[in-house]
Structures are given as C-alpha cells and as structure tokens.
Amino acid sequence: MQHVLRPFTPADTESVIAVWEACGLVRPWNDPRRDIARKLTVQPELFLVAEDAGDPGRPIVGAGMAGFDGHRGWVNYLAVRPDLQGSGLGRAFMAEFERLLTDLGCPKLNLQVRAGNEQVLGFYEALGYAADHTVSLGKRLIPDV
Image 1 (cartoon, helix red, strand yellow):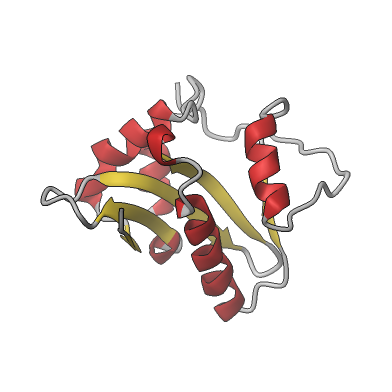
Image 2 (image 1 turned 60 degrees about the vertical axis):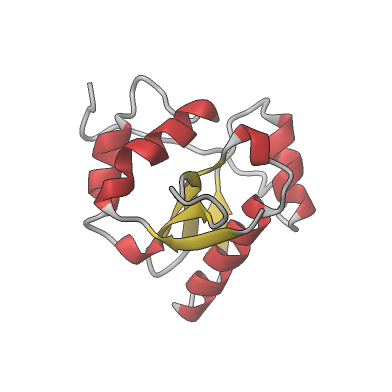
C-alpha cells in the first residue's frame, strides 16, 4: 500500500479526528477541533496527513502535528490507523518531521508519550529517541470544556 504525506487541509478535520480516536489519542480535556484550529494559526505547514494513494477516495490513514519554538521542536498527535501500525508509515512521518524541523534550524526534537504506553515507547526508541529523564509539567491556560 502506497501512502502520500501532505499538508493538512480543513476538509481533513473529521477524518483526522477519526484516526486520532481510533488510536486513543483524544481525551475529554482536549477538544481535537480546537487543537486543530489552534495549530492552523501557528506553523500549519507542520501539520501533515497521510493518504492511501491506492484508494480512489484517498482516505486519511495517519496524521501528526509538529512545531518549532526556536529552541526545541515538538511532535504531537502523531497517529497511524491501527490496522496500518507497523507498516512504516509512522517512521515516514517522523522522518519528514525531522527533515522539516532540521530545515528550520531545530537542534532537538521532543515528544511526549503517555506513561504505560509501551508499544509507542518502543516505536520511538527504535527510531533513536531516548528518555530525557525529565518530568513533564503542564498547566491549562484556556480550558477546552
């Protein structure tokens, strides 16, 4: 199966959310529609989707967001449809994000994985990512609910 990575368009919204939901990324305290709207205001070119090139309807089979704040890069909401996990599509997303961020002068890429998600931790470790031995802290400034 051949996949094409391309920038997100607003018409992709519901398909992207469906992939995120199928992968268990959506949480009650994060409205994915608001997260998409926010991303479209900052570096929208770093919001990518993957289409199934062999399907005439070209369904969305993966999506992810990246960003660079001038100090560190981040990847968020990276998901590949469950039946395609292990196909190399996640690796393709990460390679493209790394390329795009390197082109922007990004010296280091960070990402967060929920504790206990061993499958995803293994995926990133196989790509050369390692625990930074830091604690991630957060504070909600604008509630979604």
